[in-house]
Length: 286
Image 1: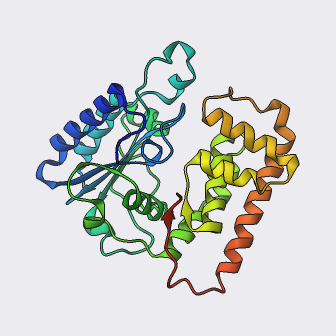
Image 2 (image 1 turned 90 degrees about the vertical axis):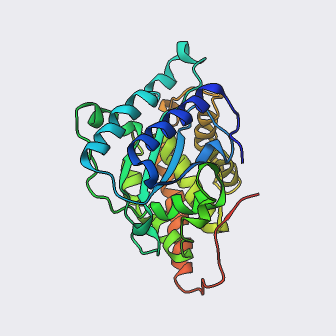
């Protein structure tokens, strides 16, 4: 699969990341894959460049320091996306995940990662904290690995299904809802992202299919009470770059809308507990 839309800035970021990874890991670098919105649904105004990396070994402390220092310069500062004067810059904030193959294959839950960079960690890396994670245990890897296997662009290495395990259906679903409480705690300051993430979770637990954030929002709009539809319409429009981020006029509806989606998610998960999942798999929505 190819990036949509392609642009020189993103291609240059990918090339810079690949040079960095080769310099740090050498022959132990097994695979590098682009996934996420670059592949599914297309890059939007606030999209990241998501890179998934498979290594034969763990990185050292010094190697993590090198990765963090370089990625700070390669990744576009997320907050610059709000700068109207920077609209011509098509580079993206980089999210890069490194896993050690032997730690995730054979599969065990919860899985662990070796290194993660995202723009929310920028200040940690800039201050010299090269391992800013509270834990390397990450249930979310069940979702990321599934996404990479379903839709990706290979930058280096074999097809990801040769390096990455197939995540069991139950583990994928468990990981999907594990962080609901912490996600809801962020609704006040990360409103758009929380609403769109809840939309993706709800659509996936109901349909066993992964959708882009915009497609998940469209799916949810058909199922929300009319009073809550303006909230999701706003979240989708902001994500697509069709509206500016503002919630003052809808503030009283944001929490109830989120609560409604969480209720639907938990209701669906409760029904799943009594069903046979052996023949169920996660797919990519058409």
